[in-house]
Structures are given as structure tokens and as C-alpha cells.
Picture 1 (cartoon, rainbow, N blue to C red):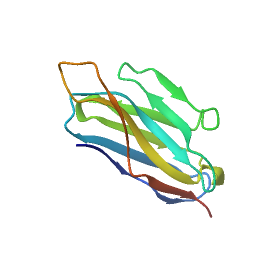
Picture 2 (cartoon, helix red, strand yellow):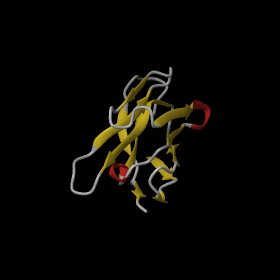
Picture 3 (cartoon, rainbow, N blue to C red):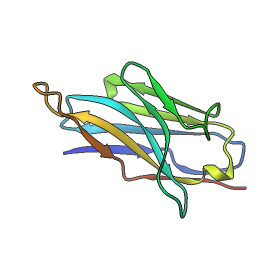
Length: 122
């Protein structure tokens, strides 16, 4: 069993900041790509930011310049620092991890957190 445990969501005013955390736990050998997706109300899930173990990143255009993704590989944890938040950032944010569970193979699986709600409103 592998699970991604998210925290940090909540209500924030426009222009404010929020920091999300996600820790991968369970039968883990190594976490490869890790990051965040979000699903606004009534819309499809979309990429926010993705980060590999070596530091390469993929940031959505809608949040470039306002978010920073970081990782602590020793803790299998990824963070999303969000600044200058806008009402359109309101969404359920899902942690994502591509994870290998065996040191003997290169097989990996995609895992998702349960989601944490971020509401940007005055």
C-alpha cells in the first residue's frame, strides 16, 4: 500500500499565499516524478506543477511566476508554494507521484492523493 498524504489547503484571500505539502508513505523504494494537479469546480483536472528527482520541472502557464514546486527526496515529500493567489486558483489540489516499490525492478505506478481544497475568496 502506497498513499500520498496532503496538507495545507484552506481558505485564502486574493493576493495571499498558501503552501501545500504531500508526503508519499508506505511500501516505497523510490519516488520519481512528483507534483500537483488541480480540478476547479465543474472543470477537468489539470497540471499545476511537476518535478522530477533531478530537479527538472514542468509548470503550467496559468501559474508560472506564482508557484514554486520543491522536493525533499529523503522524506518523499513535495511542496507547492503558491503566491499571489487568484480566485481562479480555487480548486481541489491533488498530489501526484510516480513511485517504484521494488529495488529490483524499474517498474513504477502512478499514485494520487485524496485531494485538498484551496479556496481563494475575499
